[in-house]
Length: 191
Image 1 (cartoon, rainbow, N blue to C red):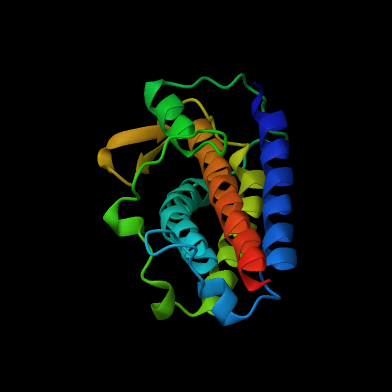
Image 2 (cartoon, rainbow, N blue to C red; image 1 turned 60 degrees about the vertical axis):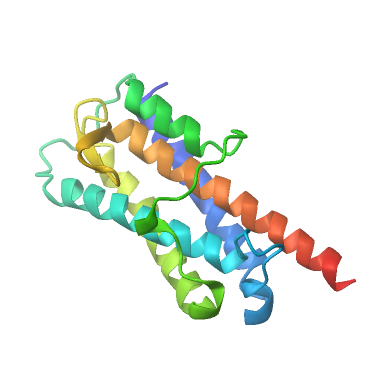
């Protein structure tokens, strides 16, 4: 897997995620966005808030690396991406196809739907994903195999930049799929 092709693919997937949220969720009422299919399940707005909490952490760390870039190159160099055990494990856990369910760590667990302001949560989601989309244009100038980001588990566990950006997009897709299932249940429940 090559860095430049991967960056382009990730950008396309982020554009799809942004379009999905705009098309599918911005027209819903606050009540629909807060509706939960079961007491132990997340609402649409809780799914989006979870993404905001988790991804803000990684996007800030990536922003720090991108901001430190001194643009010497005019064209980014491509590279074959390498994953280590940490990157493979974290990407597997958040992969939309994975059937494994892990509880969200406390710091990225959303508040209850009743406590969230849907318009603010959606706005934050769109802002964060748009920021990540733009940062990928600059991040291709970094070495995705050598540069590492701290994980939400602490500074002792780091993930390669290439694994981190792939994990972020997969995580977004996983929870957007979850939110779309909730939306489908709202429509079924409403009939």
